[in-house]
Amino acid sequence: MKTTTASVFLLFIIFSITPLSFSFGVANTSNAPVLDSDGNELRTGTPYFVVSSIWGAGGGGLALGMPRGKPCPEVVAQRGSGDDGIPVIFSNSDSNDGVVRLSSDINIEFIPLRPRFCQTTTVWKVDDYDHSAGKWWVITDGVKGNPGANTLTSWFRIEKASHLDYTFKYCPAVCGTCPALCNKIARDLDGEMMRLALSTDHGWPFFFKKLQTSAMEIEQVVHN
Image (cartoon, rainbow, N blue to C red):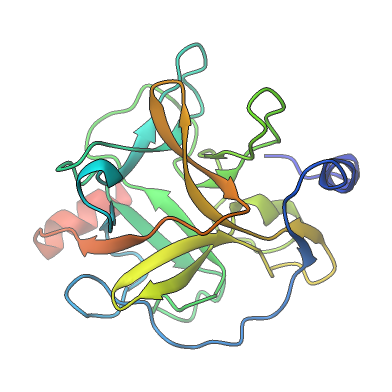
């Protein structure tokens, strides 16, 4: 990932021709924990499935996707109803806090359960603007940790939708003087693949389902 003066300037230009929200980073004002589907606090480093709160036509869980013609880096895609997808782990910008909290800056990283074709990271990030689709897609190959200007596109937030349902938002505050987009994240169809992208509408609701496995298996999944 490269964030340079030129790329930041490009954000200003594109903002002037696209209807997305735009803001400077604002410090988090909420300390409430995010809860999983069992009502327990989300913990950093613990694998969870991210599953659509809307069943049936609303699809299933999030997973790595490989668009035709450009398989790497992989994108954040959604599988069909009944498929929980691939688990993710969360990391806080504040590495001393082991609880995932509302409206706080987090990294999100897929934990594949089988070997991958791509050599890029599985950390989420916002891609460069796709002029052909008119979208800011959420893809992988982000940077984990090191909050600041050089990792701006790799930081996301979780916002409460209802009870145990949540939405994702891209509105990083890891660099207080950096201009950044500030938008909810929703689903959007890219050919035959359902993907995540920044949106000017309401975010798509998801719930977090803890991966049911032994402590030893979790250790292997997270660190392998």
